[in-house]
Length: 139
Image 1: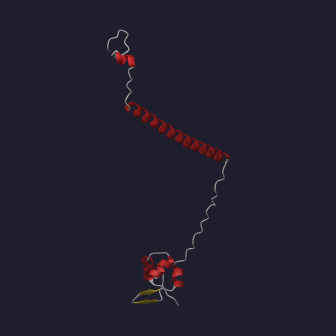
Image 2: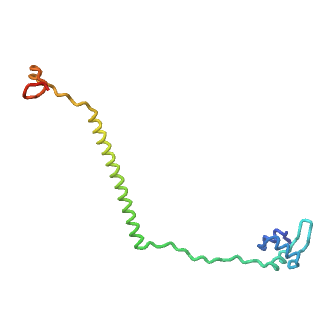
Image 3: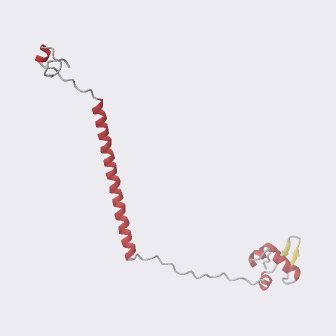
């Protein structure tokens, strides 16, 4: 026959060791033998004094996945359309940014280039006229 120690009896009954010890001292629970290693408790006697608790069976409601309603389908379609518009707007923004950068570079390069000096014509050089003033004065 298999006997239980104080700790094993407490674990099997689902109570504290102190509860088993008090039951032994008060006589509520009798033991088979007391050895130097401790009490030896008969399992039948243990479960007479501390009936086994039946594991509670919890009835969980069956969870069902929600079915897609018409409203959900409409919202899903609206979300997808909004995501497409956002992606298009981002692509347009990037294209405009690139175009602005190219225009800025073109303007910067144009300003940095030296302006060509107009060549004076043959007669202007011959008569030492600097400009196109009608009076013939030098500009």
